Length: 318
Image (cartoon, rainbow, N blue to C red; front, side, top):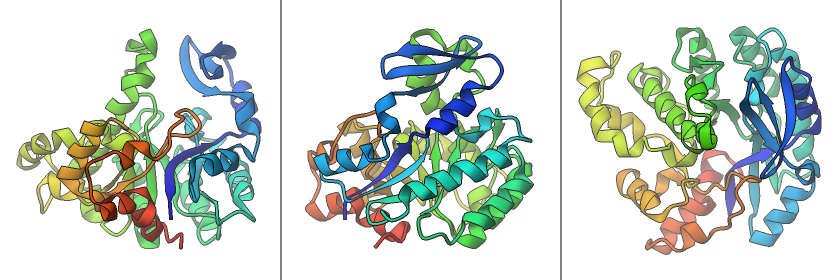
């Protein structure tokens, strides 16, 4: 089975709801159009992406068996905390309906209203067990609040009890206002925020306390794999009650292949092994097929693991 673990659903209703938020403007960009506020990029889209059959046509063209779909940035967190539970309900229902009747090709990664952690627990209970649901998608920060913050402890405990896979996706970092030139908040800021997110989760002991759920990191870790030795150096100095060096937890995570660059993918392979890499595209923003994995100097069984065998086991797709 060939599986894309990093793909997005484009909801017209969700984009229209974001467009109604105070200060939001719509303007052209290289993908089609974007929403922006206070001069900062919020979300990009294209009218063609609202077609519910667009991902299936792209999958057929490229030979994909299945895609896991989630909201694109900025996820639910662009909405005020008091509004997030309602938006979560209808957009998750839409995402599940998008996959309904097509679960042999599409599975949903619903979002949680983490601006209201108590509501996030309710939403977890509501969506868990739906046949269309393969896991949940979580942004790298929640309106600037790190995922390692104590307010999210009950959410991690619940996810761990459910053994529910979590797919991380970067969002604009808290310092995004300082890197708006040349769209650097997306080009590199997303990667910076994934590094910060994963490092904080490790050093604050989230994966120590809750070891029973799979966590999939976007963009091949956004550089965090290159920093594993540095994180080990930090462990005895600044980590919170870790029983193992940081590398132990980093190597238990899974990483998608959206870095694309062959030397980066090989570094990840050498550090964590093919069994912890999962094929991803970042559809519809990035137009790629399996070539960036197929061209790697790896054994056939390793490529098969990356291209979908591991994802099929972790997300229970088969």
